[in-house]
Image (cartoon, rainbow, N blue to C red; front, side, top):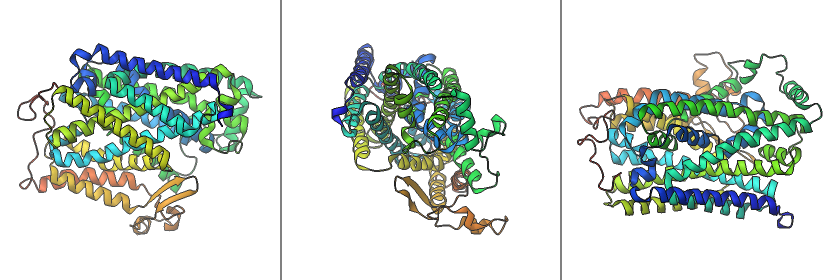
Length: 538
């Protein structure tokens, strides 16, 4: 493949990486005199509204988002193509309305601080594990996506593409922390709409019949040509069919499961005030939904050009469209956009995971007494090791995206009830938390797990016969509610999360005399009886 190497394109991408490194170095320089734990992890809580909005949007509108939206639109139709973007946007809006302002008022450093104040540091460390695993798996999935883009467009082998990208991003994240990521996100998000609009323009004019032909072919194939546009965003099957129920289960997971991520709250906590934290999340949600339209349109155009079976690997829909239907300079600009979008979220994920490990586990749980310089060194070391772990997974483990999806499933099922209880229920305690966690986990795993790989579905079937149990109350054929490996298609994710939301407050009140709630999570961090201010300015 090296004999076909696109040298000019590679130089352009490397130039962008050099720019990102310079931004990281510059951000570290301007914050050098006052870099505390809060400066490194949450930008000193002084981030302007416009930068906070852009870095939040860029974290969600990443390379996986752009590639996946175009892929799912081409492969599965409009209802699946828009699902991720619309759900992420709604999630950001709901997070802004109900969570952002309240959490910013507490002046925490990570999401896990909320669990620690309510349930204690030991159980909070356990709750941080699914959050950290989700960040690492997502980082690995992004590296695989960036490697595939390098292969298709620039003819660079997978391994050097992953190593180059991960090395540059890990380095600038270690240098400048949250500020490095925020400034590079501004560059990335500025590039995204410009390059995608250019690609759309040239693709429309390159396809015989243009947009009208593409939409006609696409809508006819997916049987939505006679359907009002608004209804095309939803499954075409009956609302009570297994496919529709499964779609709604996934939709609810994406909306509410998008809240309990530390990379989200890192941006919330970086805002200059609680009101700006709330506003920036709502604005980012609206921007995310608007930007969803561009890769969706490109997915429809790809269908109009190649048809239903013209692209063998649907995950490469966007890179192939850029390479085939756009002029060379737009192809390179679009590739830079995808690479920049991937690196944006990769940096956010490794900083998020590194912050939770260094702050909540090393510092808060094991009580390492560190001055500010040693804490920053620990945080940078954590980022390096977690970045290395993500690279290893990307190179060694197949179906990283499926692993991330399952981890996101667990984040929703396990952490959304915990976060809601810790933040809004002053009587919740560690006994209720542990009970709710275990019950939700058992119910979710009882429905079975299936992961999509290149060779088909892998996993294990349902351990609890949900369809048979439900058949006693509702008229249904249990065999229709299992997939090929025996995983139930009933909304087990939503059911497990709802049960957790009920169990935590109920058990907490029953066992109050055995485990009193910790100091209220609704109080500010600076209150002496809750948490003394760390010696290194965190």
